[in-house]
Image 1 (spheres, rainbow, N blue to C red):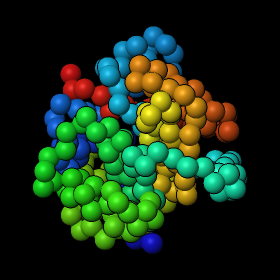
Image 2: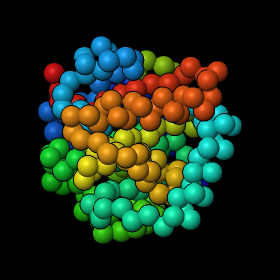
Image 3: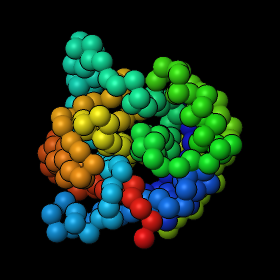
Length: 228
C-alpha cells in the first residue's frame, strides 16, 4: 500500500487544499469547538458535511471490524448517487474525507478541468474499490495532497511515522445520514436526517465513537460550510 504524508486538521490548510482541488472559494472548512447546542449554533449554515477526526485505538479498530462484518451480512443497497470510495493509501484519509464531503453535495461547485472534477468524471461510474485504485494512481492528487500536508502549525511528520488519527465524513443523502470511511467496505447509514439537522444528528453519532474509548480525549470536529 502506498503512503502519503498525513494532513493536519487545520481549517486554513484544508480550505486552501479544497480551492486547489477546484472547489469554489464560497466554501471552507471550519472548526467546530464542541458538541453543546450553544457551540453548534455558532457553526456557519448551511453545514454540508461534518468531518470527524478520531484516534484509531484498539477499541475503535475492533468496533470497525465488527461493524463491517455486520454490514456485509445485511447486503444493504445504498442510493446510486451516494459517492463512496475505498482508501488504499496510508494517510490519505484527510483527502478522502474531503472527497466524500464535497462530491456528495452537488450544489458545491467544482471547477471544470480541476483535479477533483477530473477524478469525479473518471470515477463516478466505478465501484468504490475501483475509485480507490484510481485515486491511488493519480499523480495530480498525490502532488496536491503532499504540498498541503507540508503546511500548517505542526512539524511535518516523516512519511514512515505511525499516525494514530483518522478522518471520516458525515453527509446527508436522500434524507439519510451516512458515515463515509474509506477504510470500511461500505457506507454506514445512521438513520434519518435533513440539511437542517445534519450537524446535530452527526454529532450524536460522534458521541457514540467517543463512548467506545472514554479514556481518549483527542477528537476534532470540522465542518464544510459557507465561507464567512
